[in-house]
Image: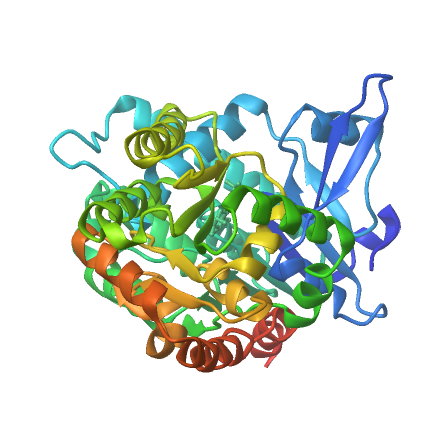
Length: 465
Ligand code: G6P
């Protein structure tokens, strides 16, 4: 790991992402609290030998991060970029989360949006400047011939910009989202679609979570810029970290949450569990509608099942995310109003992010509901079978990347079909225990086939070959 400024200009392995592995909050007495995050890249990087000098370049996100940069506080091996807050907001909220996220997840309500106007062009300039800040920092810090792994849709232009500055580098880019199909991708203005693809194609290698997303990218590149040139695409289906999850899921705090949840569910009831960051693509509202349909059409389940919905807020700077979050809570309350009895609350909803509670819910789930409109992978679908105490039936959207690996052992659904989802919930609830246990074994094996370290190192090896 890189430890001081002198070493920083010689990093041999570099990672770049908007959100870094650490974040800072200002404490009341003016101090800075550091919180480390998890995820595939974090465990991947930790697998690299200490003689390999690595550097993670990320953006300062909140006031705490910015203050840390100003004070020169930092983690070894991490460089935070203090990009102008207005530029960052336009790039992150305006372009990454309101345009690119919508495109790749097919979220536009097309009669009215998108409308690519002057305001969009202004924000696109900010997106360029933000990508440039990363390309400059990477160019400055990379040793001759170093490997650079750029992450996600926030940084689609950075590979091309970095290639111009440093033709000697090995540049990889990994998409943690789906990729839009060509007809939908071409909603973008032609010049922007071309700029975006040429930015990506500045990389030597482009990584995707499933073949389907890689093929969609290739189809877009073929239509818009005539092909992928010398850039190679590869598929790396990030898996769950079984060792970490199983150990973490049996710590005392998870035990406490488990007892609380069991108490709230009540004795002799089945559970349908979902855990999501409340992104617009997660389809939580249709999931609740399906559950309501189940209660309406199969009254035998009333009082005998509880839907545990852990819906943690994300990207609350954006009005449509806030409205969606509110709609989820409103609908849950409506179902409880309609069907609840003095001893039974049909939907238990929690919106405060709590990892221990998520693991407790995984452990006790009889059914896991993962029904995204479209999802790069969906790690919840992979984590539940690994952690589940007694086996769990998985209701899985065919539009999740995880479907490619787990589809054979899940009950799969078209995420738009509320009636079919209600039927799938019924089948999952009624599944005999032996079948459920058998399927869970297969799901867990498929879910852990490519653990985070392997996922990261495979990409690194491919880039250096
Ligand atoms: C999801 C996506 C990732 C993305 C991340 C950003 O997890 O799967 O592709 O990088 O969101 O989340 P953020 O909270 O930083 O906007």
